[in-house]
Amino acid sequence: GGQSNTASTGTHATVVGGQSNTSSGQHSVSGGQGNTASGQNSVAIGNGNISGAIDSYSFGKTNNANSNRSYAFGVSNTINGFDGVAVGSSNTIGAGSTNGHAFGISNNITAGAAGVAIGNANTVSANQCVAVGFGAIANALGSVSMSNSGRTDGQYSITMGHPIVTGK
Image (cartoon, rainbow, N blue to C red; front, side):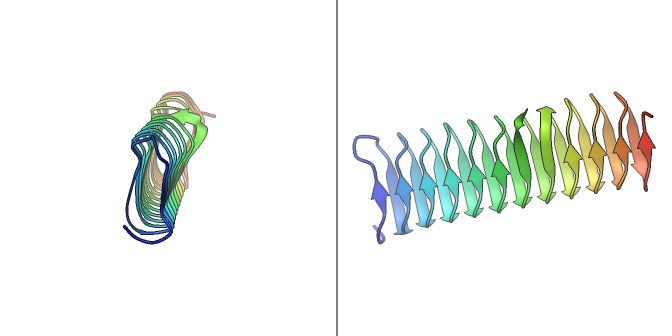
């Protein structure tokens, strides 16, 4: 149904209503307006979402799930790292990250495995880091920054409060 929708033949792709949706990946589904599901087993539902990799899912508005097994929910989240999850608005999980999880607004996971950013404008850039709060930065292996603009630069270090730098 809908208007100006495209489902590639021979792929078992499905378009569910709406307008200007494209499902071209094998077993992909798109619905709403202006969504693209081009990865195998991908789903894009809402407005202007892109699910462009195997088992990628985007729900909401203008999300980009660009890597295998990525999940974007909300508005303007971008996932380029494998097995990433972004929930909220304007979160980014970079290509150098695996198993990154960003929840909130404008969080950034740039590198490393198993990073978590929760809150607003937090950054994770190493393996097994956690950044929680506002502007918290976890830069070193296994570090945790729960703060307002605090930063961890030493392995397995922890910051709490405002503003603190550990590991120097």
